[in-house]
Image (cartoon, rainbow over the protein chains, first blue to last red):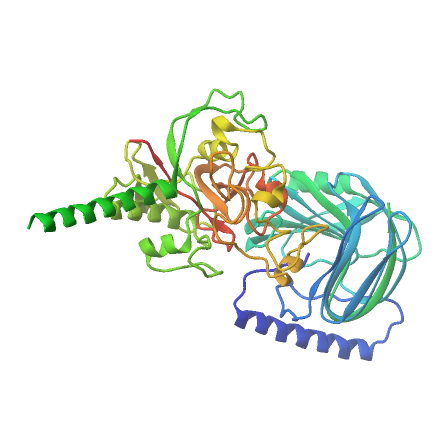
Amino acid sequence: MKSNTFLSEVARRVTFCATIMLVATSSILSGCNKRSVAEPQTTTGDRQSGFVQDNAKPEDQGTVNGWFWSLYREGGSASITHGSGGNFAISYSNVNDVVGGKGWNPGSARTVGYNVGALSGSYNFVGVYGWTTSPLIEYYVAEMGSVTGGTYINSISSDGHSYSFYKQQRVNAPSIIGTATFWQYKDTWGGSSTGSNRSINMANHINNWRSRGGQGFGSYNYQILALEAWGGKSGYINATVW
Amino acid sequence: MRKLLIEVAAVITIIAGACSQKQSEKLVLVKGGSFKHLKSYYYRNSIAIADFFIGKYEVSQKEWMEVMCANPSVFKGDNLPVESVSWYDCIIYCNKRSTKEKLQPYYNIDSIKKDTNNTNAPDDKKWTVTTNANANGYRLPTEAEWEYVAGGGQQSKNYKYSGSNNIDDIAWYWKNSGSSYLSGYWSWAALEKNNNKTKPVGSRYANELGVYDMSGNVREWCWDWDRGNGADAPPGRVWKGGGWMGADFCCEPSFRAGYEATGRGPDQGFRVCRGVK
């Protein structure tokens, strides 16, 4: 989910420094405006590859009770626990990056049901994340937080609210088929809340992408409900997907 | 004097034999025919493949350096496949190698005349490249030739991947090309920290035709265009076989994808072929 390019080491370090400055600025601002609820942190523009900690590693990946899941962490600490069905909980502390979630392979134009029972600390994105091939597309539907960058295309109404559709081309970037030039589709709402059953009618998003994306739509690869947080954040999520 | 002539003749014979052996070691003669692999896109198609030679291995960095004198690869090693090469780079390599080996260059490359059929925005070259169909020089395989070889040609056993139904027997791909064996779903962050990279050519089992790495290690450029589907899916050139970075489905012989001809990635390489003349 982290958008990487093959930046030079210098560029990586510059990006890292910029990220640190941004995080520091965010911390200062949040300190001036304290909020007790979980806070989505947004950055301006697209997120590029940052400096990678040496102790980063793929934590755990696999399948449990037929559910496809994964947890990846760079820096700090993170752990995932599994409840019944599509339930999972991730706690993380001071991470450069954490990405985790649960879902399906292959994805589909299904209605994704979810309930974020608990969400505390800070994060960047909670929502649906997935890939298609032929054409290669990386897509996001942000239910909490946001995914930014790219060109605004249109807005769509689905599940009782409005999403903004942005698309952004990635050139010579890592992807599920290898280095490729491809499009990211990003639908952002961001207004979801904890403690209630919610749904994401993926068919509405996919139909809009198909008609307005300029390249049709591809064959499904994996599709998950995921959380991502980067830039030294700490937090906790307990969510169930169905 | 007679003894000297005999010794010279012996040396010439040894050198000639060595060169001949080198040729046979590097190229495999592919017996042509119709497609036998049941899952091939070309199966039951009227296309028949003519006999041709194809590289037993992906082009190594040593082979690349001998012709091009500069190595663009991210992961360095004589016996590693060359990578980070564009389609244009590979066309040039084929012609230069042909010239070096006194073969007829297969490609006509016009770097001034823009190919008006190439609407790919990231491709800032758009060279016009045509072929000399009767030349005996090195060239890229067509997609059909590549898929024919990957599927085992006339000796096809209908494997899922090139040479086996077990991908770990024959391919370097995202799960097994790093420090640890990965599982779960594909994640670039996980690959990057797992030190995934290319592996020496021919270090997995060969397929039915004795050809290595048709699945995995580096993706391989083919001659053909990949025509896009819509304004934002511009045309590129076809690559086949999947690489160390990509998912397992990319390693199936029938999988196809395109990339702009100027595209370079640390998982993008090629192998050469030649007609039988």
